[in-house]
Length: 242
Ligand SMILES: O=C(O)[C@H](O)[C@@H](O)[C@H](O)[C@H](O)COP(=O)(O)O
Image (cartoon, rainbow, N blue to C red; front, side):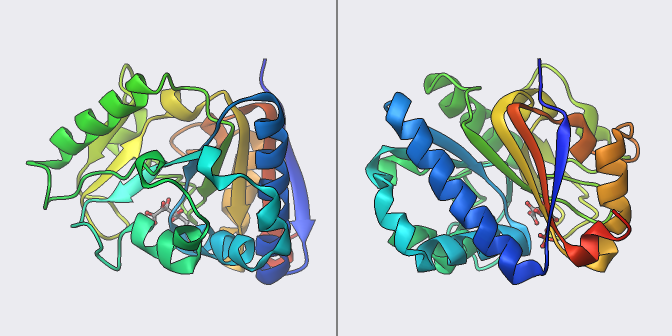
């Protein structure tokens, strides 16, 4: 069983990021009350960074034992470590790096500086995920593109529908940079909680399609559900007529 998609509308992008941060802190605290570790898959994009900015600014961040939090990325731009356009670099700069995570619990996707190819990087990432017994994500965060993409799974792109893999290389991405590594639908579907973080008028159709359960040629977001929660956390501009 998976949870049906539910929509929560916040007034603007700032309140959306703050509310998502509060929700994330609570979800981690709740998870750590019953499990030794909380496993998160993070997103890039502007919402990915805004959430970490809000977590870092929240006094409630002190309620989390960050040494028991393990983080991964749903996708990464295939660029060298520390590149300012990498998702992990942007999340770190927004506040992730200052929370007290154990470096060994931060699973970064190898870039061209430490891997031979995006394929090799994806295979190594998948192997690490297997080692840690995934797929048991407690929270998976996704930004959503105007075209309905999540992670680096783009509607109409041949890599989007890959099956039988945990992580894949994506070439010729319609969103720059062109080369990326992404988790697959199979890997992220049935996470405990799946949250889509969406702001801005240009995302209205993506929200409509996601909530309507559109097919993969229209919406990548609609292909992924959480076991206990599938939440669309959106601002009023992205919610449109909802
Ligand atoms: O590598 C990336 O850019 C992302 O992981 C991507 O999937 C992103 O989350 C969406 O494009 C939404 O981005 P925004 O929140 O900036 O609109």
